[in-house]
Length: 130
Image: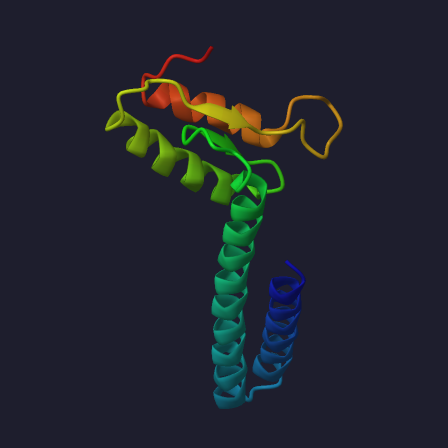
């Protein structure tokens, strides 16, 4: 995720420069800087998704059971996207069990954000949590 962090830092720099240019009355230059910021935001988003895919593939390559996925190390938003995709795939499979590994979260409370969001996603889809 280091590359995406660098893109986001560059984006912030462009947005800050755009704000300064706008406050000085140079609106065309501010617009140019804002567009550059948007470009780096998109690059950061793409790199973040790529890193998410790589983490997911690395964590799950050893799992032979196709309905077991490991989501820890993911950001909550990407983890929920992956969980929902796998929940949809499991609807078409004869097995009704999807095992999700979430970890305990970095806040140290033992109740990670991915786990809580996963429970909510299962509840919205009327899936039974075991």
